[in-house]
Length: 165
Image 1 (tube, one colour):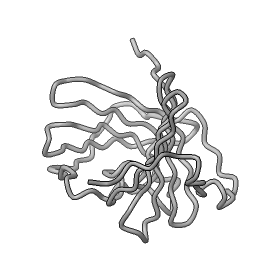
Image 2 (image 1 turned 180 degrees about the horizontal axis):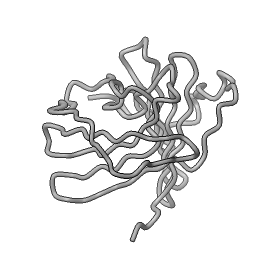
Image 3 (image 1 turned 45 degrees about the horizontal axis):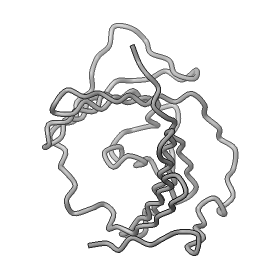
Image 4 (image 1 turned 120 degrees about the horizontal axis):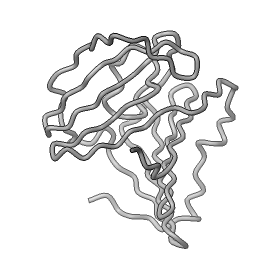
């Protein structure tokens, strides 16, 4: 049984990407530009609003150990796109089981750090931690309409800054 814990939205335009995770307790937004070495994280927890700038990708990032295509017996379609399966294994013991379509590609595909070498758009992935905890994300809507650059604008005055250490 899968229990929904929140919703994740991804916006991409040119070199910019914005990912927002919304749960009942937290709204967290991650913004980055592939031409820069830093990213911004915004966290809204109740009435508190925090902003943090980090190095991207962080130097403490775990490394990819293997990437292998997985053959599936059945055709998987998500939102009308035929998907291929791929598995990524990481040095921290976590495993990403990915379904992606090569019928679409984005200018920025690393809305998750490990997706930069995926040859298409990831429409579903399950992360299994080394301890066996699983979290699944799956696309429920895909909108290819043009975006305004204003959705990547941050009004810093609305947030309490958290210094990078």
